[in-house]
Image 1 (tube, rainbow, N blue to C red):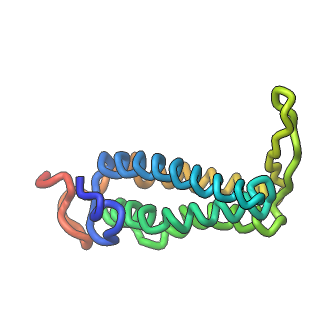
Image 2: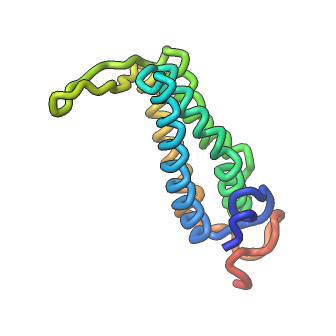
Amino acid sequence: MDFEFLYLDLEGRISRKTWWLGAIGIVVLNFLVSTVVSMIAAIMGVASTAVGIGLTSLIVLALLFRPLQALTLKRLHDRDRPEQLFWYFIGPSILSALIVMLGIGGGIDEISILGTSVPVYRPNFAGALVNVASTAMFFWMLWELGIKRGDAGPNTHGPDPLGAV
């Protein structure tokens, strides 16, 4: 698999199978990047604040932006769908991180788990509304990119990634 093409190149088309494999790679990368960024936030003492949680989310999104964009655009190209859909898919996640960081999406509560106090982010109405929008966009994205078949044969973005049909 050509990782440079898959995660960095904004041109071309990919099949559903390639998209799913790329998405699994993004999930693994997200876990690794989130772990490192969260550890840094904990060392800095901001991990359990709304600002720290929102900032951590924005940093992770920024670090994964190009791979997410490349993977999504190539799949949209395969379906000959407008590239602007990428912003519909990622926009609610960016908005969610911003409202958390700004403190308008909810707050931090302390709960006790096995006798240990653990900070938990609890969204308010605005935060919950953005979370619902993010979830809806996520399922729409799965439908558009992971379930629906691409165009058979060549389209304006290149040849069919599945070959001759």
